[in-house]
Image 1 (cartoon, rainbow, N blue to C red):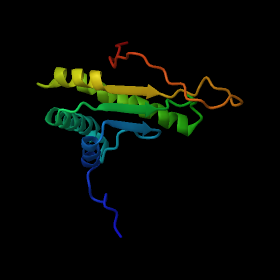
Image 2: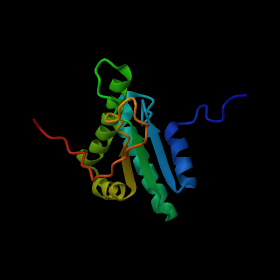
Image 3: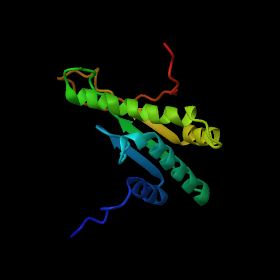
Length: 149
């Protein structure tokens, strides 16, 4: 039997789940935001955030958006570390684009995201091999502003 998800757009599935939920929690190791084409990543993310924002505005129920990421060990020789690092950077780039590319809704959308989105980095770099693996999640305000060099 064919999967009921076959042929459905990822953003449609996410939006449908978001509409039924109090929170959208995304746990990402290798790829946080799936896109059919890499060149459409920024537009796809913008469109998804706009769609989620529209769902909240139409339904009146506030929902929270959570991304849980592992930034990796930061070891060039470890392919998984490189993938995890790029994954975190990809999410940062998508959020940065939402503030840098100006549209009529840029400021309002960003204010909504700032009030409803949480990004948690599960950083295991400081844990030794002998220590128990307990999640160390730190809360801190963040800015996705790129600094010129």
